Length: 239
Image (cartoon, rainbow, N blue to C red):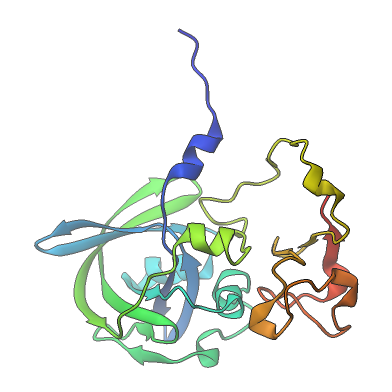
């Protein structure tokens, strides 16, 4: 029997969006992650997948501690961009948000978070480009009620994309062209060359008071990508 590998099957796996933080040698950092899941209840343990190239991975290896903040559905793209598309080697991310020091000393991000948890790494597995850390929780707190932000909602409603270091990054594998007469629409979509965000005129940019129906060339000259902050010159028309 001939085997096939249709990578689109992976797109049906469900994910959330989280801020994972760590601290080492007095320095703090955090990043967006979408692979966090519970693996046992007594004691409570979770698994977290982190790219080996990321600074947060380096801190987790050094200190053996991490915290996870579960984001709410209303989290603005700019906040996701801060932790998902900017490097902690270049900026201090934690000085731009609210957090509380955990019992381990790890910063627990509270901005746009429904809850957070922290713990100590008790095992790890080599996943190639990523390390999967098994974490035994030592503390957790619920901040408020609400709907958690899912990766599907982030992509489909907020038009967000995954960074290249994410396990769900789709690379250049674009969807096959479909002959749809909607392509006759006059307002074109534009894609950010830095983070992959798609500006769709039919949606606009409501988080930045850009109403639906605003064509890309009608955007203010000082408008920037709501995810990574790139200027209009970094955008190109979606074919």
